[in-house]
Length: 215
Image (cartoon, rainbow, N blue to C red; front, side, top):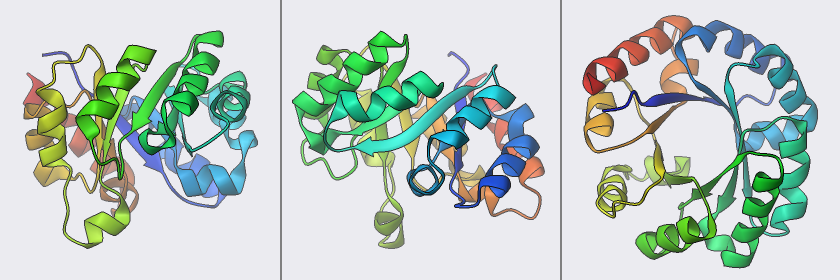
């Protein structure tokens, strides 16, 4: 199978801490995700900073757009984002707007299926509109209640859509192999790296586990 990509979720509100963490884990990850709280707090200047520092990395801005899709996403694509996220619950018109903005900048759109009731239908319709990535996302509150992304991942993978599948939700060293075997193309890791005593060591371990599982 193709080598899955590792996406590092940068969730700190502190601009400098975010950049410092990115520096530490850069050799082991493929995508830098500016998390929703992080982008709300730091704004577009963080996008520009990471784009300048890491021209060889994919840069995802987790906007979780809910309305005004083209208008909101357009500025972040123009600043250097390769991928922006839009909520599946926003509706097809908003999703189409983000996709339009992405196409204008030669970029990609990810549909976030968090809290979508009919995830399969939303994924199908979003892909028809031109979305390139479907995101399976078990949020922090759901994780705290004991939920995991694995059932949803299996359900979406079985659809056979010609897109990449991203999965996020408490992924760590012990669950990486399960995620890869279930068909994830993009593996999102946050706390397992940034909460570790040595984030670089944890990122390297996850990189090795992902590559071994995909071999």
